[in-house]
Image (cartoon, rainbow, N blue to C red; front, side):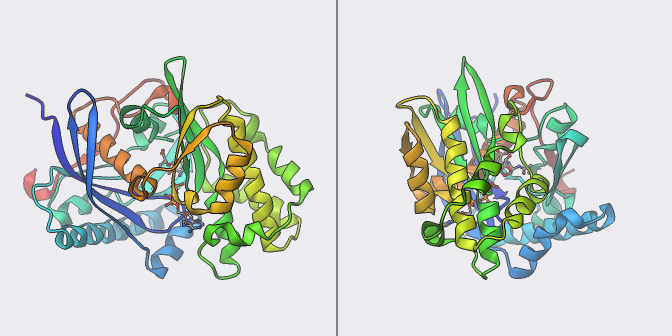
Length: 357
Ligand SMILES: Nc1ncnc2c1ncn2[C@@H]1O[C@H](COP(=O)(O)OP(=O)(O)OP(=O)(O)O)[C@@H](O)[C@H]1O
Ligand SMILES: CC(=O)N[C@H]1[C@@H]2OC[C@@H](O2)[C@@H](O)[C@@H]1O[C@H](C)C(=O)O
């Protein structure tokens, strides 16, 4: 009989580069999937890794392969420390997203580093990973992948909104799950505050003291991406080409850039959350940007619900864990309605440690 209870470790490294989210979680299937997170931690990147990961786009394929190996080995160390710290035993497998190095689905390309065989070998554990590649091979965007988890674990909410490096949303429309990236969020805010040596704009304080530049706001709101129909996704490359040069051309003070960009985010999000009185589950580090949340609430007619910190911070890791479980069961974990692939499919690579092959 197929198992219905899984003890796993799940990991996610998001675009904001704040660190590696790692959790120990139990999934059990009763009438629906239930979960229980027993341990959770964000392992901050050492400065050196943060710099290296922020420069991946510039690397050639040999350099990428080399850093992939090193990063896989680094992840193995992070996981093994987590196992020791929490004295974890009887783990069924590790589900890991890795870190996105390249994402150009229109060229058939997406590359997450950290999914190398040495991860399984070094840990001597089964690893399920590399969830995006097959979707791109099937003509999909390879992202977002979290919506299947929104559907299976958080179906009581009309919308699931995540405010990470980018804002993404998922919701049901005529019994089909729709999801897409809305606009950049922390990836842009963090970039500008890094110029004054801050990691992020705590609570949105700086932004709240800035002034909106109406011309920049109008130009941001007119970017072509916003009128495209889903499925659609954003990557760092898009921000580097379309957003940063535009903002820089205005030569504004940082607080005014932040203020204008926050208004832009709130406007773009409000265009999506247009179902009156709906419940919106909001997660991701952007939740802690109080000024951003204030502007989102100002424009929105929905009920904004912020869950406890564990879900705010670890929902993506949780769902990549679920993707691993679904792959293990050979069940669908990528929805064509979301990614635009030519079929629903069970995506991911299973790495067995060498000595268990
Ligand atoms: N107190 C705070 N005030 C303002 N912003 C905050 C605060 N705490 C966290 N953030 C923002 O949240 C970011 C981290 O968010 P999160 O971990 O959800 O992103 P991510 O997982 O890397 O992104 P993605 O989901 O797009 O891959 C930080 O880099 C910062 O910009
Ligand atoms: C290619 C890639 O890594 N995309 C990430 C990124 O970060 C946010 C947004 O862009 C989303 O599309 C996706 O991650 C989430 C977790 C997802 O796949 O659902």
